[in-house]
Length: 444
Image (tube, rainbow, N blue to C red; front, side):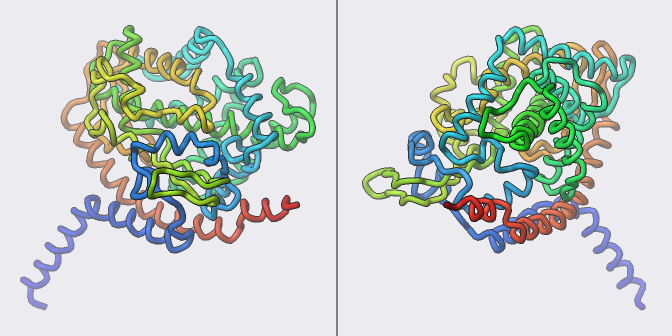
């Protein structure tokens, strides 16, 4: 073989390999979207979109007829699959009616606490977790992994009114981690990790040592699933994701940890750029008139896109600029970090901002944060960051470049895993039909 041809082939192969982290992840995302559409269908009306503009987003979202949640939407099978066990008791997926109202009222009662108590709970847990980190040198962490035990301790104490034992904390973290890694397609579901927590919670309900119990006619098993879904799944995952985004954003700022207003601006700007909620779907129970041209018929699946909506209005740009909130009013900014009050807003919207601020304050008091990893809303990397104790020298150029390079190659490999596991789970959810089968069984 001609040596020049061989050399050219090696050069081309090397160039393709070197450029792989740049082109492979976007290509895989497009392929995954194509597979999702082929399997689940292109169901739904995007909001904002051609039929419902940003100017009508909040009004349509708050319409009493936009009240259906799972029944009648094919894509609900996939959400139920990810949230198992007990997705039928997940507050966000209960259909409107007495059962939903009872569950929602119970959640509000559990989370109804003074701001000072919220701050104290989060601060104490943050100190326990952060005390275990090296105090005299820079350490590397994945922020989501660092935060999960913290929120496990917080919400265990919220529910049970006592300190969280280490072995129970491990059960809670194992459950939440499995849910979120499956949601992001980086690993398949491992139901045994979730079932261990289910058995623990059921035992607490059965032996009468769980202060939070749903009233009759809810069963002990339904209470167990409710606790696991609301407090030890959604709460842990969402608060950990929020802190990962906040601390990655904080790595590029000089926020004063003792200025609560500055911390609030940092948190709000983080949730504007990287909203925790992607798309919320609702099924209309009656026609909704949008304008003179458009009426959405009953049975329409509305796909409310939080990111797209927050990219309209006075704060429509992608630039991370916390100081915008010095003059910009939140009610005018198309800013809905915790949903819309009239339609199943996040039940933790009262305690979450206080707790997020408390943990952010405690981290920034102790550490300088450094990260050169890519920061996306889905954050499958779990938020890589260097934590340097206050007063110590931060990582130099070499370590920063090393983190960037490592992140790029990890993202390339991870995208392939997401394609394989994500595709499998989409097909498996379609086969199991958890949501559709449930409603077929309960049909009168």
